[in-house]
Length: 68
Image (cartoon, rainbow, N blue to C red; front, side, top):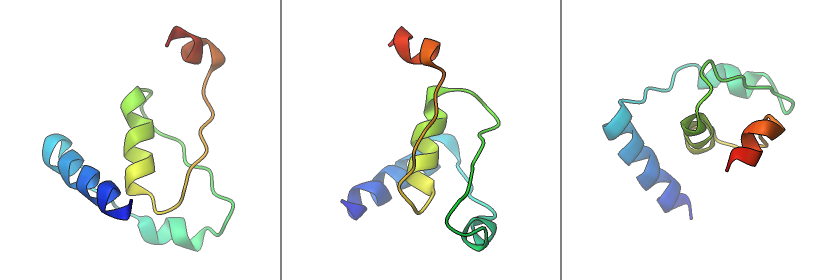
């Protein structure tokens, strides 16, 4: 499954010119970290889950979730 995540990361880097900076700070923060995206699109969750090393849990506005 890791190969799939790597492939998706490669495609996203190509399509959206994604650059990841500051992962050393993420690792230094320890086990309890809150990441806040500076944009509010559905693509944010995909990008964060692909480019951050851990499995993530997302909080979403229930009104947004009901739109799907």
